[in-house]
Amino acid sequence: MSETGDLTFGQRLRAAMDEHGPLCAGIDPHRALVESWGLTYDLDGLRRFTQACVEAFGGQVAAVKPQSAFFEVFGSAGIAVLENAVRDLQGAGTLVVVDAKRGDIGSTMAAYAEGLLGKDAVAPGDALTVSPYLGFESLRPALDVAAQTSRGVFVLALTSNPEGRTVQHARLRDVSVAESMVTSAAAENAAAAERGELGSVGLVVGATVGSAVQELGLDLAAMGGPLLAPGVGAQGGTSEDLRQVFGDALPNVLPASSRDVLSAGPDAATLRDRARSVSETMAALLS
Ligand SMILES: O=C(O)c1cc(=O)[nH]c(=O)n1[C@@H]1O[C@H](COP(=O)(O)O)[C@@H](O)[C@H]1O
Image (cartoon, rainbow, N blue to C red; front, top):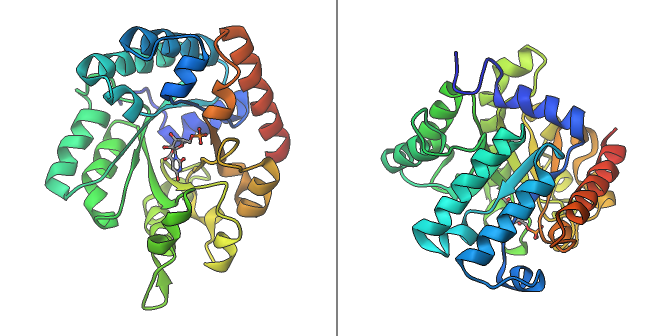
């Protein structure tokens, strides 16, 4: 029996997307947002902001993605707020993607993997964002631990920021860096794909990458894992962009939006309505 029941992360995510629509609601307590909610930008404000998000999103959306940086700002007490949110969201039946973008040499990656995905981790998410820019294979400990605990990872492939292309579009012997991530992720998901299931090794491909997927010739549908698509809303990405970026891979896309949804706070009911409405728009697009 795995840590998370018998189902893999990919299976649980597919079921959650079918039930709630595909939105991944972000929890990004930026200073300006916290203050715009009438809260003080301190530990108390962080707690109240996070509690409202948990109340609004728990049981309502496919997944929630707390951005670890905004909790780390407040040191260990801030991290405790994040840990409580992870537990509370999971208690409400909601999948949590911890956005910590970890990436290091394998021996250090093993510690990140144990701490954030392992069976004895304090408050592991259902998935973790990881950075492959020390080489995809440096992520092996995270891939292994995630597989053992039925958790998932999202590997940065084509990020939503304009600077990402200087690295991710670069070619080595005619293969772009992004394409090598797609190929590596596909290999990890091969067994799940054979069973006709969504894999547990996802990629991050921003909603703002324009025609990059086509230009680089990436077969995202064949990659077989979920596609986390940040950049919707505050960074300018629209549902029409999602259609153009992802094409036949749309059924595997998990659009992520933070500031655009969070700006509906502080009232938890209004925030929930906003998340539900964005999720319904995304569901209509992807169906
Ligand atoms: O991994 C991510 O989630 C991520 C990858 C990426 O390419 N671009 C990106 O914006 N993100 C994260 O997604 C969130 C985007 O927030 P908004 O722009 O407010 O929707 C932030 O937490 C970013 O760190």
